[in-house]
Image 1 (cartoon, rainbow, N blue to C red):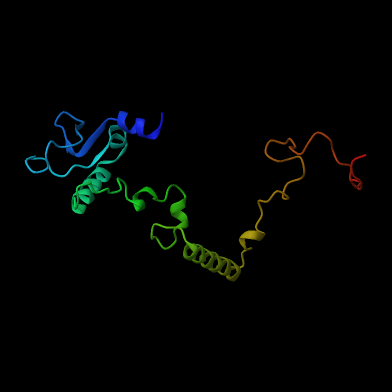
Image 2 (cartoon, rainbow, N blue to C red; image 1 turned 90 degrees about the horizontal axis):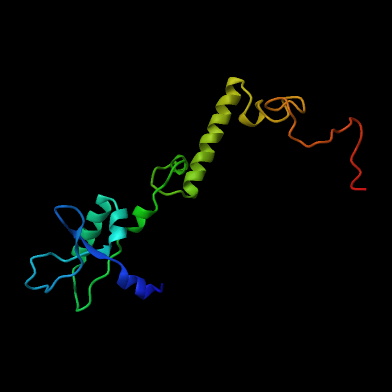
Amino acid sequence: MSGLKKWFRENWVDIGAPKKGGGYEKCGRARADGSGRPYPKCVPAAKAASMSSSQRRSAVIRKRAAGNVGPKPTNVKTIKASEGKMLKGKQKKLDANKDGKISGDDFAMLRKNKDVRMQKKDAMGEAPEGMMGGGMYDQPMGMEKGGMSKRGIGAAIRGTTFKGVF
């Protein structure tokens, strides 16, 4: 279905006019002058259902603050750009300066903190993180997690070198 056909078939509602039983009033007003309803913020019903209450409230406030200057309606973004790009999951750990964005400053701060930790470990006589055990070379070959080698079917003979494919 093309864009304009889809647009006309969607159920557009006014998120600034909730009904008492749930849902929203249909979009539009008979007349702006005599209507008791304030300036509408219209979105498809599916979009309205996916928005949080604070996002709906914010969209209505911004739409009404923009007003209607001319004969055409004023378009206002439904979801602010900063609302849609929040940090998720472990991204929050990377935001060292807690400004809500991951930038070069955050990585510089993280590197500086890592250097400080390394210096403290050196001063205390511990091995730095890169030199600590737990690597793949600490156990004999073929004894990783469960005793079975995951390196392949054939076994290498000590003292021989691989010369290439026949």
